[in-house]
Amino acid sequence: MTILDTARKLLHEGPICDHCLGRQFAKLSTGLSNDQRGKAIKLVLAMQAGADEDNELPKELKKSEEGKCWVCNNLFTHLDSWAQKAILALSDYEYDNFLVGTKVTGLLAENEELAWAESGTTFAEPLKTELNREVGKRIEKLTGKRANLKKPQIAVLLDIESDAVELGVNSLYIYGRYRKLVRGIPQTRWPCRECGGKGCERCGGTGRMYQESVDDLIKPHVLAAAQCEDTAFHGAGREDIDALMLGEGRPFIVEAKKPHKRHVDLRALESEINTKSDGKIEVQELKFVESEAVEQLKSMKADKIYRAMIEHNTTEEKLKSSINIISGAFIRQKTPTRVLHRRADLERTRKVHSIELESFDIDTAVLIIHCEGGLYVKELVSGDGGRTVPSIASLTESEAKVIELEVIKVG
Image (cartoon, rainbow, N blue to C red; front, side):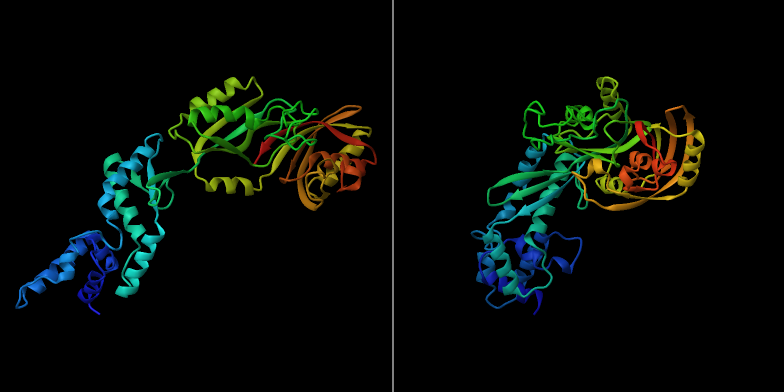
């Protein structure tokens, strides 16, 4: 079947606009819009009719210029209107690129299926694809922004049935490193164990085990800077609540959800967080990253270096001997007793790269421990009742425990 034969079949169904006629042959040529294809096909049909003896246009071709298009119901006469609606919805947001999508009505979907069935064409593109492209071109022209088909900052959804525009605003991701300079605050919100976060006497109605976290100290400043609805905090692991995070800090990403502002001054944000945290935390190296960085952060297997002050009742000679045995060894650890209430009881194997004895006193000592990420340092010292093997306590045949812990390097 020729292009003209296919076009005649579509025209026979009723009035059809240039867009919907040309769209059935969208894959046959480049450099033309669908309405240009449709006009060209109708012109050829008219010229062909003019060569006939009666010099009369086919009635189907005459009807195509009258009434509503049976495929799109004249949807393509409202392209400028849809573009204006989209721009109005976008006006409250900062963005550099966008993507247009369309939610068609059931009737339009049925009409399109009928057009494909009647014509038998294999060269058509979906109505949604053309509408997205044409509205997108108009938004580009009016705003100077560019369409991005792969990773748009904002997705514009044209809801044909409700005659409205919806926005899908993608998150803004800010990477940095934090240093935790005080003990007793967790990395993120910790719901109360008694009430599960609902609020009770034990937590004073707050629903929290601890009243602030690293996330809490960062969040309000990101909310204000990005004018976003909410944030999510993603850390490269986490230190114990009673441990300091020193050195260059721990990598993190804060996700600003549905931000109205994307051109955030990160140096000003960094200064604001550090000034307002009352010396509890510091952030540094803030920079924008893509969403994939969150998964990379979560899956990173970074080594850690700790400074641990331990309490002991052994001799310096025995302690040094145990350190020599553990340095370079693989440690088998079952989930520590202290976290069994919230983690599965598994056995892990982690390597201790080295341990140095920084200082020794009659009942305390300071160790510098370089190990694989995921090693429970407190249990490496105490043994956790035999759940960690070997341990300093078991090798010295004495009691030992960490009384102060500092993370001095991550990665």
